[in-house]
Length: 384
Image (cartoon, rainbow, N blue to C red; front, side, top):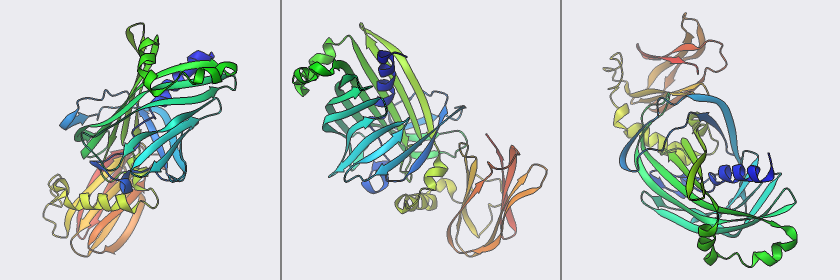
């Protein structure tokens, strides 16, 4: 791959990471900021168009198919100095200043970019309908041979609220979507003339340069966020090239984030509390109205659900008890052999969660059974 084609691909893919790290129904600093040592898995799925904007939107993505591509994202550093998000062999650098999250630049073994002024990419609190926009100019280098100049405009808007359906998950409610759009110009300058050219790049000249450029990159990134989860649940990136008055679709991808991993993040008591409040108040989980009758008359139980994480092949049982009860959980294959067993124990009133990892078993179909007192509820699950 030659230098120009590599940079076209790199800038397109990079720009999808430029804006929109965090969000919920309302974006709060304590539940939405990225954190040192957090690690996440992204699972690539068939591309899904972003759908409508506005309120009361329904996004039905239950038919998405999993592709054999996984990527890891992890964070390292401090937000009061530099926090790096590592993704696709690239470090993206951020800093928190007051109520704003700033993007400082990015670096990998081939390319380095530093913005002349840190670019505000999110502020707190952030609500549906809010927008944050900024011009940017970046100086960097490519392959230690060329100076690289990047310039353009970025904008992020919380453009939609609604209900999200994903493969293997219950209905996800109160979801907020962020739409980030970047218009990016790119120029290579020989190092020996870089200093003379640099003074010509100013914020006031960005609009004229983008108008005059024969090639402009536009990146539209959509991210869906669920209350009680620090990171996105779904991400879609669409990259297009505006070339000679034509818009050519160049690159597009959709990724799912593991909800189970997010539930298992260390030190995230703020989001644990949000999830618990939602669980205890959500009418969809009250009175077992969605169950098959075995537990509908069970006075010990006021809520029960089993959520499946098809990315990690894990199941999570949620139970809310209004009095002390004996509880037992089993995982069996289709022939009835018990593979996993949580021995009967007395569970105190309140909120109970049990995670079951079925990825390690060779079988592809299982039955999860929850026994509370003399009542039971079962779910059939399939391994991806």
